[in-house]
Image (cartoon, rainbow, N blue to C red; front, side, top):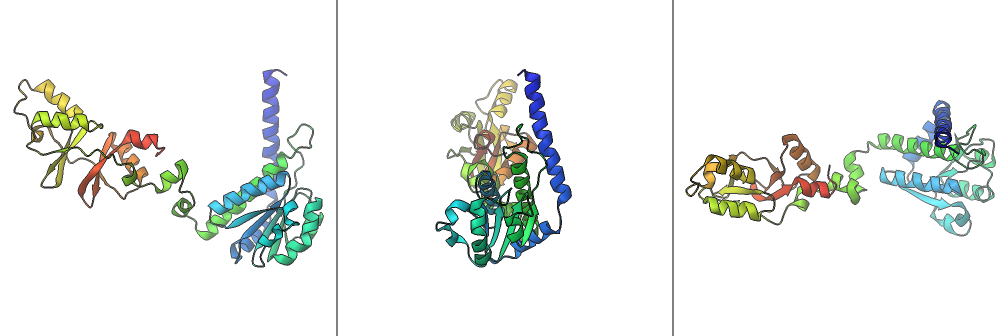
Length: 319
């Protein structure tokens, strides 16, 4: 197979799935609205049941729902009949996923799922299947064509299932008025969590360089060199009056022939950009980008607390 054929096959697979997603979008009905409202009004959690490829889809839907404010749990159809049905409580809503709607493991569960739950939603490609007939609400995931060249492997059908699961999650988020601050509660780890929750204080350098306005140039150079940030903070009576960077020192050296009497006050850059230690780290990054600078002075109730550096934030994935 030459490269052109490979590309053509890839595009055909994607086009097939796009067509099926368009069909799903056009097929949405009151059953979808009823499903969203039923899940939202439930006093319990959502139990998502599946087997085979539908089980993988179910796990993904559960993960999305849990992270967006709808408590959910996956139940494997094969394990359910051997004791795991105990997770289903009378106040729970069950979402059962089966493309055929006639998988033996699913069919065997249906009487128990209906009896033990508040409502049974069936997500199936065959509304006339046993699942379709048993469900209180049916979400139709029928596809005309799988993207698989043999028209057998679940491809278009699983894409449609996942898209419908995402649509449920998004609508439930809107109903719950779920904001980015709520999202942050469930994502404390990783890059996503850091950008949503990490505070400036977590990234402040332990090194805290400072000089006074009367400090001589030698002390200023030593402080800037030891800071690891190329900057020192000028403090007078415990107040921040400015900063001196290695750039300030270079400019002074270029313009002064005699530097022995130069003091910090002579080369200070006043009104430096500052940020409180309790602000979000992403706010610090926004300020650094906005003013095109490499460091911010961090304060604690207005007092000098430390320095935060753009490279530290970049290394930590803050954007």
